Amino acid sequence: MRTRKPKHPTPRPGITAARVLTDARLTDTSAAPVYAMVREIPQIVDGIRCNCGCADLAGFYSLLTCYEQGGMAQHCVICQGQAKLAHKLHGEGWSLNGIRSAIDAQFGD
Amino acid sequence: MKAFRALFIASLVPAASLLAPHADAQIRASERGAVSQTVDGTVITVDYGRAQVRGRDSLFGKVVTRDEIWTPGANAATTFEASRDVTVGGKALPAGKYSVWMSSDPTAEWTLYFHKNAGLFHTQHPMPADMVLAVPVAHTTVGEHVEILTFDFPRVTTTGAQLRLRWGSTTVPVEIGVKPSNPQVAMTAEQLAPYLGTYGVVFAGPKGKSPEMKLAIVDAKGTLRGIMDQPGDDAMQMEYIPTATPHRFLPAFVKDGKVFDVETATAVDFKIVDGRAVGFSAMFGGKPWMEGTRKN
Image (cartoon, rainbow over all chains, first blue to last red; front, side, top):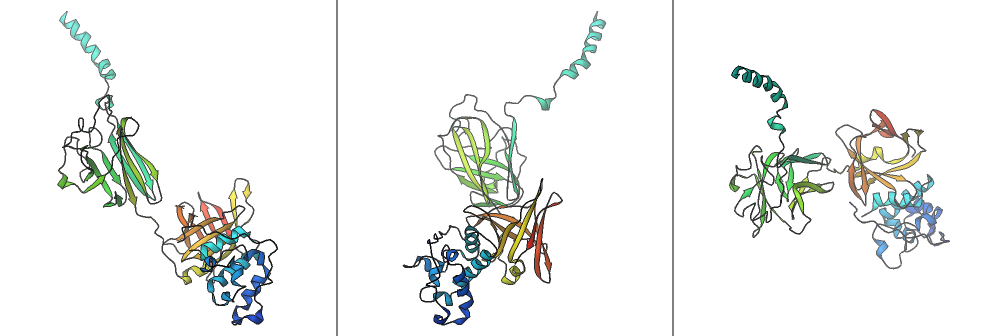
């Protein structure tokens, strides 16, 4: 059970999905629907900490980074699970803080 | 004249008997007192005679002699009762009622004892070998002056409480631990699946129903966690603890990832249709106070 409160990044002003890998660059096309979800809400995904462990690596800023560099999110169930939950809740009108809390509860340490 | 005197005295007897206080209503030098604390359903009660310092100095070592096992109180021995099994200073003590004793030699480590006979008088010192439990206790002698011997519970958590004895300038704290009434049991993915999703929730209040709020129920490492979307930095989180009744859960408040308060009076009942929850309701005082409808 999680005992510490993870720090979520602040979404960068003007952030877009321009660097999210295109379907053509995916080696695992089964991940394409999740990538499409991320492209719809980059400003939300950029405000979420990735809980798969990559957040502590140099160069990573947010969950959005997982979908930009090296295509790691194609093979990570946590990256994909967090994005799916964020997309679903955002579609239902949830606030970013509410989405973060739900993600922490399900995917947190 | 003698007859007159006898008659006069006889006439006074009924009035005197009415005025005479009963023995059990006499003022006592050490009045009886009791303190009780509930911790997660376990009720802990200490009943004791409240001895007073009354100007005496050197309570420990003089009033309570070094070689004495004494009951921390006055007259009938102090009793400790636990409605369920507990730990005292980390050592197990079965549920029950015990008399309490203490060795308090100022030059040695102090020990708190529990004896199975709760009906002893303070002069009936049991032998240490007859005690159910002996717990080393720390003590300090730098506290404020407390005239009347006092037991209290200055700290209560979800898993225990601190029982504290104070008399004169001496303080003796001891930690009491309890067993959780609703131990968290991980549910399987199959058990969790019917309830996961998002719900619209309304609360019943004195002015009618509240605006609908958003609730997500997620699988939090094998437990059912409800996240309420609301303004502010922290969304309210509830953990739903399964009960013996199918589809009934006890809501528990979560803070920093940990359950800190189980609400036993407002069980949540999920309505299941074709193996999937379509909503839930919670009752309080025989009336529904929260209702949820599945949104997704």
